[in-house]
Image 1 (tube, rainbow, N blue to C red):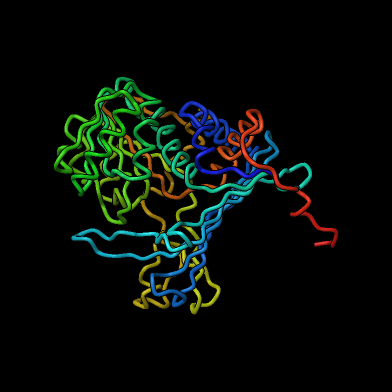
Image 2: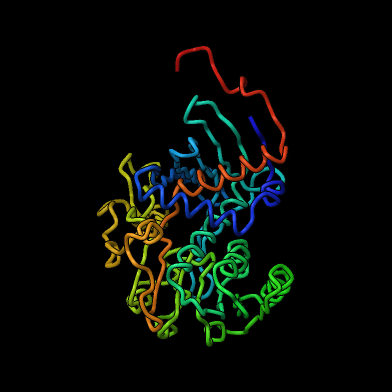
Length: 366
């Protein structure tokens, strides 16, 4: 069984390999040759003074590679107001001030565990890669200016990924903290060789932009509807970063999947699932009953990304269309695709540490 670190994984992934792995996975999903189990979150309120404990898991499997991936997170989460924004923070409260996120790979031939590694690098590359893959089909061919909101972990993957699908000449970056956005721009410019410019207001980031990306930790709207002009493509990390009014401005909307939200299970509220992205009202005691299933939004019947990638539904059809990709929920399939690619490349290059697979097997019938 192979162990890998985030640093080793970073050396094994590239924009091209990430896009290629995801594209093949979505085509396989459209063809019935892949499977995905939707995300599920378990909450234990009252176990920590630093926030709410959450255990998140999702899985996916691919017939061609004969791999199944389990992705899980063991988190302490809190939500707080910052001005007019509601922000979600994952506390680095594990020993050493760290987080806990793991990917486990299994063989679909023998059932044996093949690898275990942290999810941080793959997590951001799969989100950014999926957004860029959508942009490959939905952004104008001559798109050259990228406006991005956010200067953190997710945003740092979106810049090179978007540069991988379009000939980006200029990136305009806004985030609330000036020192952070300046440092981010210097890092991204050195990494991509593209002009990356910090801007002082959200409106400045969207000026003349062909592609707009929201990659923040906000759970409230980041991109206003009036900023969407003919020909622009807009995408997000979370649906809430756009909001209904902004999405309604789009002529063509594509969603990640028709599974609309995670299935949340909260201690003290029974074993009924609560379908929403951030069950803050339930966790803070403001709501304990009522509709537990999210009402389907107006965009719920929009085409899924897998059908666009597989060519079953057209992408952009005119230069003047406003197009929108909604990354409404993550898929375990993404971790099977990128985890499998990383595992194969690590084996090819002899990277990582091996531990006996037998440690994870048993002679007792499970």
